[in-house]
Amino acid sequence: MSEPRTAVELDQEAAVRRELEDYYRAGRPPWDSGVTPPELVAMVAGPDGLPPGRALELGCGTGTNAVYLARHGWRVAAVDLVDRAVRQAREKAAAAGVDVTVLCGDATRLDEVGVPGPYELFFDLSCYCGIPPHRRDAYAAGLTRRAAPGATLLMFGYGPEAFDDPISGVTADELEARFAGWRLVDVTPGTNPVPTFWFTLRRAAMA
Image (tube, rainbow, N blue to C red):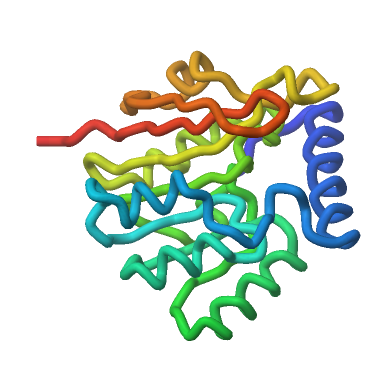
C-alpha cells in the first residue's frame, strides 16, 4: 500500500515526469549520449572487472548501457519512467540481438515494476539526482532489498550546484546517510563543465 503524499510532493513528482517526457519528445536528452561511459566499461571489462551476473539499470533511457551489459554476459533488467524511452530501449536491444528486460516504471517504486532480483550490479546514470527528496529513501530501500551480498552500485550524479532548483543533485554525504548497509568506496569527479561525480557503493557481504 503506497503512502499518502502531500500536494507539494505530488507536484514535484509530476514536474519531474513532465520534464523527462519533454526531453525525449524534443530529441535525445543530454544524459542519453548513446555512448557507454568509460567508468562502466572499466567496471565491467577492465582488469579488475566484475564477473557477469545480474544487473539492474535505473533510468535506462534508450538502452545504450543495458545493451552494453548484456553484450558482456550480464542478465539485464532496465527501468525507465518514460514510455518513449522504454520503446526505444526495447528496439535497441532487439536490433543488437541481446536479451534485456526493459520495463516502464518508477525507480522509487520497484515493488510495482516486477524486478525481484537479487542483482549483483546496479547502474544509475543521473536518475537518482533528479528524484524529489521525499522519494529517495524509497529508492534506496527498494534497491537494497534487491541487492545480492556484496553487490555494487555505480551511480553518476550532478552536484546540487548544477541545478537552479533546490531539490535536485546528490552528494556523497547524502548517499552515505540514505543507503544503510552500503559502503561508499569511491567518489570520482566527472568531467562535465558543472559539478558531477561518479559514486561507487558496495553492499555489505553477509555471512
